[in-house]
Image (cartoon, rainbow, N blue to C red; front, side, top):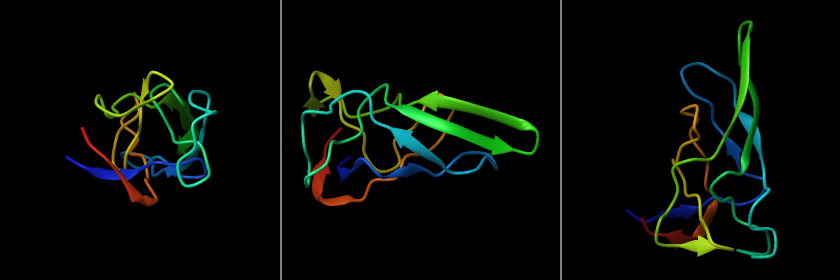
Length: 97
């Protein structure tokens, strides 16, 4: 399914009650989409909190057909390894599965 691209500055919206968290781009920093790097597989999801529990994660589920520097590009509602959902505000750049 085609969804908007996730871009640097987009956040994870958390999961199962955990708080939203920033996403730290570590992958495709030389590729630009709408003037900023897209989020890609293995970009880091910052620490998110629920009560006394806290953990970070990495973007895991991404497009397998659209790559930036040999890594799958993340889209709106893709997931991190902890289940955290990813926002995607690059609505003028749609990314397929």
